[in-house]
Image (cartoon, rainbow, N blue to C red):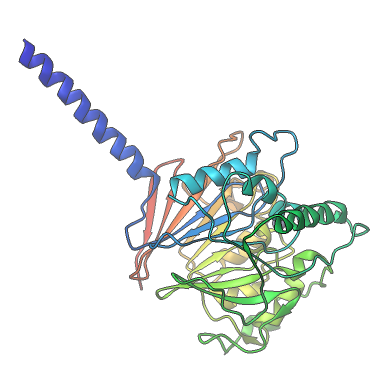
Length: 359
Ligand SMILES: [Zn+2]
């Protein structure tokens, strides 16, 4: 009886251990040598964490401020939680693409939770308080300057053509402060036939136009993150010559709003996977979904939220959505980039991973 009892307790412990391992395994499909990318749900802002196999990290943007919950601010807490599960105790590089509140706003609350080694941005804010929404931009910029003034961390102003001082993956700056690279990247330089038919939109004259844009390369895999860089500015990167070349993963510009992500851009970069950091009510415009789906190499479209204003035909498959309507779960999406060039996307909501083998 004793033996049996001991056996059943031992068995239960074993089963519990297996279940825990399975639950933890479900969190990530990341292998040892992978670059892991976490798309953190900051409800229609941006916050994307890159973690190299060496542990070196880069966070792009910090979501929004949360004045109502200073003790547990929504976006900063979500970013800190993802840092913890990713094993990041210090953000080695924090890139602020531009000074809109949904990108820089969460910064003061985040640095109170996770230390930062180096701040990278496009230089001074150029959007005044008189511009629509400009007051929050000025406030966000000023709060950031206050953090910088009180910090011993490095501070770098990124310029087009720069390569960021990151060892474990290669980051080329392609846009900053409204300027773009003068010459194509090594894998760019092709003519772009989509320029002839891609609709024209005016430049906004906002901070969006000034976003720090980057091509991130790990092994053979190329990733494009242009922040909120706008439609009217995109021809500078891809028309008439595609200066960027093709990419494997497209972090959909500007949360998938139709003020960015022209056919000229998306056809030129021809991504295998696209991830949209939208919220339920912001971004992932139906036209953006059509443009991405219409690109020539697309294998997978992922969204942080169901776009609640769109019909089912203009949302990706539910299995590829991190947060469904009515949920405030704050689920992230994770992309693992294999050293071989393959990619895998994990949806923690479903614990499913979709593999995109190297080609
Ligand atoms: Zn934004």
